[in-house]
Image (cartoon, rainbow, N blue to C red; front, side, top):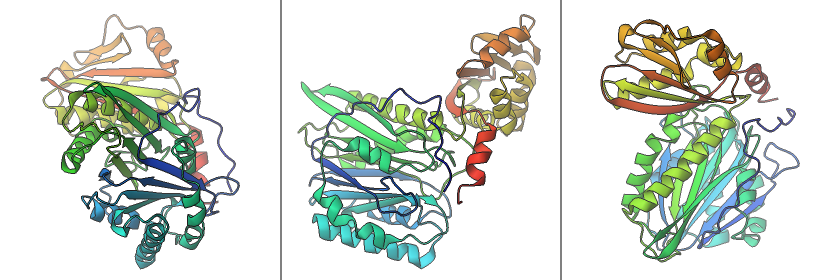
Length: 408
């Protein structure tokens, strides 16, 4: 097995102190699916009344757990819900065996927890194309069910990691009608990260009550400006799953509440940024701000073209202020651009404008921006009001090292 990677230099100092979410309990176990000496299965059980929304990969080769979850969204909230997540094996490209694994796991979770099988959601992350040894998971379910605790969210975040170098969590608390409403989320993701969504598993929980259909609309909208605006390597996974679970334990109905939306947005952006900060081999966190496009969609196309360019990303890794690579990425994106209206800045340093290097630009100023651990690239197309912000990281030799022996 590959040697564990050192903690990302872009990682937060520590896992945050997340609030307890009423109506939600976690447990973790080590089943030995791939990893030895660490937990690799997480069970979350939620009380009756929980509304669940989900956004999943649009890959044409999506996994059996993803297909099962998609089919179950919108099911009755009367009898609670459960999530079972394993790491080390994605149960993807496993044919009918993959469907059997999902059926066996969900039936066993239902038997242990009393949650109906059509309210048991699963996710698997890890190696593609190898049958999931689901019997190892089923054998741990009694242990998991007996260990459920409302204080185990950090352990849950650790159990779902694959090549991640740190567990990811974020939270917010907002006051609605004079009562506190809490949101807490965990995520995993490090490589195979690109929109639609990415090789991420993200679970966000709130004690707010929320109408299920409205919750689905909210999650889909907020995903477009958070998890669908990040990229590590331009590769879209078979297994992406983002689920938002509202237990209603606070007694506060937050449906359509703007303050709740703002708080959820903050949690989602925080988790999305943490995924980029843990990009495989990453040493730089990069924000790309695109303004002046004809449309917001065009702005995002330009931003993702820059963010996904290996030449741009390797230049950033080498701390080379090579603005010509930004020009190249804009030109190839397919969205509308005019060379002679274009301006580019690194941070507050104007680098290029009107189809040429800016008269005020000095190479040492650009180089100084590239030496920073957090870098902002600004592009103005000069064509309209469309704008978008996307996030990425640099591309280092360590990315190759991690992925060259991923299955060994």
